[in-house]
Image (tube, rainbow, N blue to C red; front, side, top):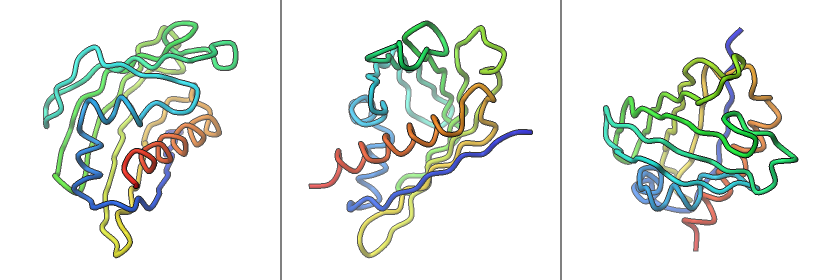
Length: 153
C-alpha cells in the first residue's frame, strides 16, 4: 500500500522568499540536508521539466546506513511543476540496489501566505517502503527547521 508522509511549519518570511529558498541551489544545499547529513549537487537545473542530482552524505554512517552506499543517499529529482510563490512539485528516484527503495516518490512543497508569514506544507506520496515513517518524519522536521533558521532573522 503506497504511503503518504506530510509535514508543515509556519516560516516567518514572505512566500516569495520561501519559494526562492526552495528553488535556489545555494539555499537548498544549506537548509535541505537534515541533521546529521550534508549535501551537494552534482547537477542542478531548476525549471519545470528540469532536474537535479543530489548526494546526501551521513556524518556518521554507523547510525544510518545509506540507500546508495554505506554513507550516502543519491537522488535523481525531476521538476514536475514550479508555480512562483506557491508550489514546487518534484518526482524523486533513489539510486539504490535495494528493491525497497525503488519507485518514484512525488514530493510537493506548497506555500500559503498567512499574516505572520508563510505556511510551508510538504507532502511525499508513494514513499518507498524502505524509508521508515519515523525516520522520514524526523528528516522532514529537521529540514523544515533548517529552512526556518535559514530564512528567519
